Every structure is written in C-alpha cells, then in structure tokens.
Amino acid sequence: FYTCYLLVLAIPGLLVMIFILKDSSTAAYLLPAWVIYNSLCSTLVVEKWKRKAAEIATRWGTLELLDQTIEQKVLRSEFIGNEIINQTTGALTKDNTKSKTSFYFILSSPILILLMAAVVGTFLGTQQLIAQQPGTIMSMVISTLNGIIIAILNFVYQKLARYFVDKENHKYTYTYEKSLIFKSFLSLFFNSYLGIFYLIFIKNVELEKVYFNLISILVTKQATSI
Image (cartoon, rainbow, N blue to C red; front, side):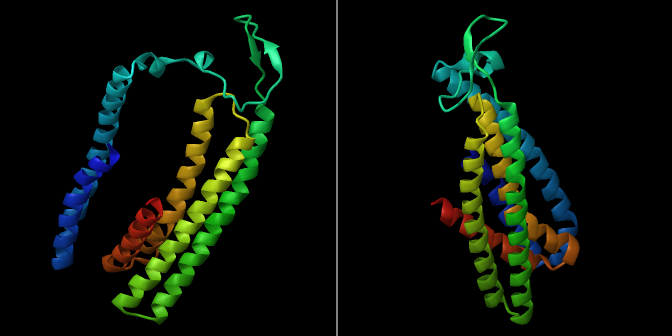
C-alpha cells in the first residue's frame, strides 16, 4: 500500500526536479506548490490507510480487534510479572513492572544520543572531504559513502532498540510496538535526514548538493532493505 502511494509523490517529484534543474528560477513557485502537495498527500494516505485497514480486518474477520480496550488486550507471552488478582474483574493476571520499563527506556536514551553524534561526525567529515575534492563524481562517491555509514548505524541501532524494548518488559503487545516504533523512528529520522537539514538551513548550499545526498541515502536505504 505504502509503496504504491509513493508513486503519487515520486512521479510529480521527478517532474519538479527536472524543471528546477533546467531552470533554477522555477524553484520559487514550484517548491512551495510541492510542499503543499506533499502535505495534502500525507493527510490523504492516513485516511486511505484507515479505510484499507478496516477492509482487511473485515476480510479476515478481525474488525472487532480494532476497538479493543487496554483491559481486553492479551498479555505478551514474554511478559514477566508477579501473578495477582485483578480487583475489578477478579481474574488472575500479572502485575506490570512500570519501574523496570521506565529504567530501560531512560537507559536507552544515551545510546540514541551517541549514535546521533556519530552520524553528525560522519556527515561533517564527508562534507569536509567534498570541500577538498570538488567535482560531481567525487561528491556522488563521498555522499554514497556517507549513506553506507548511515545504513550501518541504522542497522546497529535497530538491533539495540529491539534489545532495550525487550528488556523494558512490556505487558501488552501494543505498548511494546509503540516503544519500538518510537525508538526506530527517532533513530531513522535523525540518522537519515539530519545532514539534509544541516545543508539546507545551516549551510544554505545549492540544491544540486542536496540532491546528491538525498540520492545516496535513497540508494543505500533501498539496497539495505533488499
């Protein structure tokens, strides 16, 4: 679903890039229009996915699961806790160890900061190399190297993120997934796009150099996904 949706962005985005490369003056009105288009598409894909999720749930006979409350959630088999009697329902359940969850959640934060620092250092180093070795080919090569390092750091952090989330001992599957998504999103977003924001808002570089970095990130991310 998401891959098909990306075509709605990729095809017009390619046309916008071609027009800007041919005539940089068109960026003044094309880029604002492109941002508005992206915003509308982002809203549309969320609503479309809600309908698609309901369609799939209906087909598989699991529509009622979309409306389950926390109390109706099934305990994770990996959850470790003391068995207690629920004061409301009288059923046998396990006590949630919130202190342990919070401890490991806080403990994982310095790991994210450390990897972010590694990404910043790598990016600044590659930019220094590009400054010393100007030229389109060298820029592409060095940017690709930067993308490979980012992919490696993303892989390492994903392993660490899952390890810490397992240690957090979440009682319910949905809280486990929320914690994993939160950590993964922060890592992937900062690792992949911190350099892009730096080039655009701090260095104010030409769009051509931003394209090189975006292309290198795209290629390496797709290659690692395969």
